[in-house]
Image (cartoon, rainbow, N blue to C red):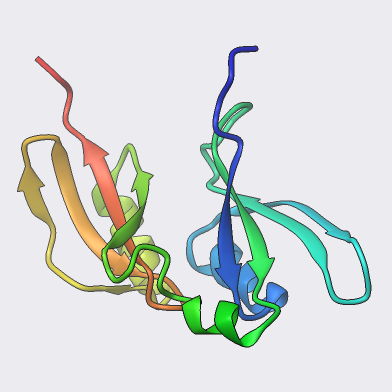
Length: 134
């Protein structure tokens, strides 16, 4: 298999609150939750459409004051994550019905339909339905 991005580290305050948010609010799947020590776990979540080789989030619990201060600052206040969908209206409606807060109304860009939402820590995410390229 060619090289691919398997997972991205995602800083959390608490494993269980992050698992609940991603699985209940966004419909992500819990791929793995393996204890490594009394305080550390290997926790991986992924969007429902992520197949073999699709990127996932490795939930990494902040373990000191410096790390805790960075929770919710994945991209320094910019959008950090890009979630593609095949049905923007469906997913936006589903997310909002589960309490996900969008920062803006949907907008049409050259690449597709997009709107920014916040995750449980305030990180920005783009929900994007790509427009077919001509």
